[in-house]
Length: 356
Ligand code: AMP
Ligand code: MG
Image (cartoon, rainbow, N blue to C red; front, side):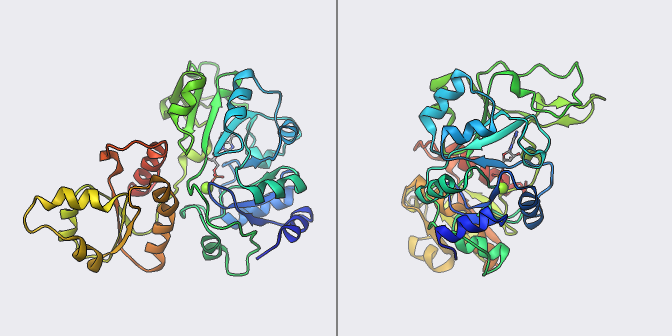
């Protein structure tokens, strides 16, 4: 474990350090240090065409990385930074190709975590993809980083992440939906007419963003194509890679009675146990709350969406470490309660279910 001074020293001398943020732990290196950035790709086994998010602590640091902002981008940043929102912006030429995977844009965010902001003030902008091996669930506490990279890996410990899900990734309508490398065909699809496109849902929701203009989720049908017109070029390359899934099978749980049929060792993650149990009480012979606790490793968030977000990846990781073969996750799509986290959580759980 490192103190902040040691973390700064290591980063300045070209090292890679795991750092805390409010979303997930990041694997950080100086944005200008090619060797350290290559080390991140190597350590994570991350495909080199999947670009990295740059983290900044001020608009001045942002101006070192991106071209001037539009009014829309500036008002969104003023509202949501520091916070779990990443903007895809036109890059300055000097940003290394290794950071952007050769794209003309760069993804940037300012994290809402005091220790991380303190670090960034001292080091300058840092690249920081999630501090996990590619394909495993993102790390939300230091133990998760140690699971993937070993017990002596250098970590700046900032406690458990308060959100526990990766940032919302957006771009605003300007020239830069054309995020592609230089080989796009002239007759590729017309970009969307919405003001804001969400590539990855996160804790900043569609509804919150819609105060600033029209919003839509990116869909693969909007992809531009290569010069032969055949291969779709995704504006956010991470979309095509497998994420978030544990080795255990993940399944939506819409009724407690489903658990009566289960013989496999299972973890059950519930948003609100009472909701499910009350619903089932009308049915004779249903599983009782007590039986439930005896038969399964039960994680109940007592109705708190924040807690549910914080514990999702932890539950996936516990399942794999303790050799559970199944993870049942309460079907939050059926919940009448609303939360700004609902879309992001649904997205991650659906990906984990489909093994994407
Ligand atoms: P992670 O670092 O694991 O949180 O993932 C970062 C996400 O941001 C991935 O889905 C990347 O594809 C996406 N991303 C990073 N930089 C860019 C960029 N310049 N344009 C589009 N998407 C990006
Ligand atoms: Mg990641």
